[in-house]
Image (tube, rainbow, N blue to C red; front, side, top):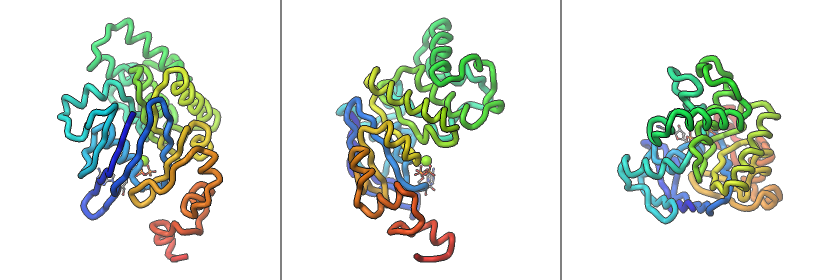
Length: 257
Ligand SMILES: Nc1ncnc2c1ncn2[C@@H]1O[C@H](COP(=O)(O)OP(=O)(O)OP(=O)(O)O)[C@@H](O)[C@H]1O
Ligand SMILES: [Mg+2]
């Protein structure tokens, strides 16, 4: 279970998260939606501890993690996997080395187990046999799937997905959605999925939370969000240029309404 309370994070004048509160129950798949730049990736980075919040509380299975040292945090990280938005692969390592990085460096598993887990994980993401390829030889969607394989082979109990289906073809996107659902149902993985892809959101979510101006402005089951009357949420999920959300984009295009 993950409990986030009054989380604040700013970069200089840019207040990104402002008293954000969200609870993810054990085994639940929580989907986080919200506009580009609203702070979804920052939010995930705060939870996995690669970014520190300015204030607020993050409890993982009852343990406050915001004040843990780097070394103490590593214990939690073994159980949590993050699929990064851009893949975050090491350019100088091949696919197998990237996928097995954590197993090799931190879990100290033997070579045979590692090889088997890498093969299994690449199979799960539909990329069998590419162990020897270098990241520079992969497409964007392949990188993302390798990043997912790296998480799967750790067999974590919690997975954070940052835009897992963005930039992959629709068939692969659907396979990734099914994988997220399978991991949740069969292995009882607790997940947070950040996405703009509403098809994916409706399909994988137990519950959807929308971020707006640093907070959660709406939360509910997929059918509740789909039928929302909240004007901001409605505008977002239907992708309409006109509505209460006018900041940024309309400024860029130079009109106020
Ligand atoms: N390391 C950083 N230093 C300074 N500002 C940052 C940093 N990381 C993120 N930001 C700022 O925080 C805000 C939120 O960024 P974030 O990456 O979380 O957005 P996002 O919701 O994930 O957007 P997208 O949907 O485009 O991925 C942005 O204004 C961004 O410029
Ligand atoms: Mg992001």
